[in-house]
Image 1 (spheres, rainbow, N blue to C red):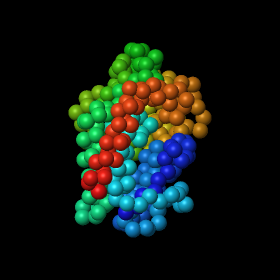
Image 2 (cartoon, rainbow, N blue to C red; image 1 turned 60 degrees about the horizontal axis):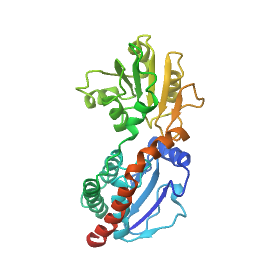
Image 3 (cartoon, rainbow, N blue to C red; image 1 turned 135 degrees about the horizontal axis):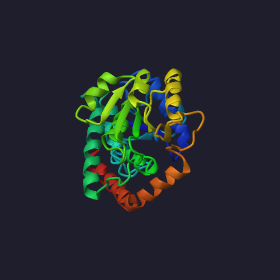
Image 4 (cartoon, rainbow, N blue to C red; image 1 turned 120 degrees about the vertical axis):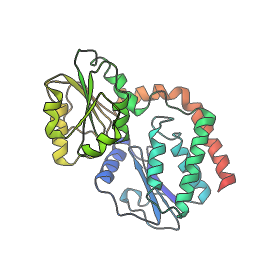
Length: 296
């Protein structure tokens, strides 16, 4: 068993973000020999034997061998100990989704299942739960906007991060409007959130009813036509603050009040939030290595 990776120790965050966005838009052909995991902060390829990675950025990267090393790294990732946000909750679901593309009898599926179990145990043992997660950033960065009466929050996207923002929006907003290219599925997923309206881009003006609003961009689906619609919404004169949680900036031009995930101010906010978890995350990484020695 082998694994090869590119992460924020080998590439810049903007470069990784661009690769992640590309992979979301143009999924490589399914490779049954391996498991591809890609997020804004990492591109990982795990395989049985030595099949070539389907992602060019991994060409020439050092290849690590052995099920023990693969299990330890994947469990550390799934526990949030190697994330930009220590203890984040989204990465566990992303690892599970990557494993879910493999047959249940595949040796990598079994390894990923064991890694997820180890990750859950590490989270509980070391209390690895982010005090400020990615979905909490709008609460910190939009706090000066949301107090105006009748103000709306526009969330662009329908994935787990967009849904987390909509489920627990910053205080002070009258209603949340979610804009997505697939509203039917999203309406089912957010059913029960009474303050959320789900629409397609052509219905945005009617949904906003001329009110002031702020925007959170949390989507990986940014084909040129949709990017133009997102930019129009975020750059409107009625839009105050914009928080862009995409791997690469969704807007070519930054309007006033715009914050991207990798802006220095945002990274400093995350660094401060990580301080209380840094020691526990280091201990959890070491504990996972010890457990992998026994299990692999």
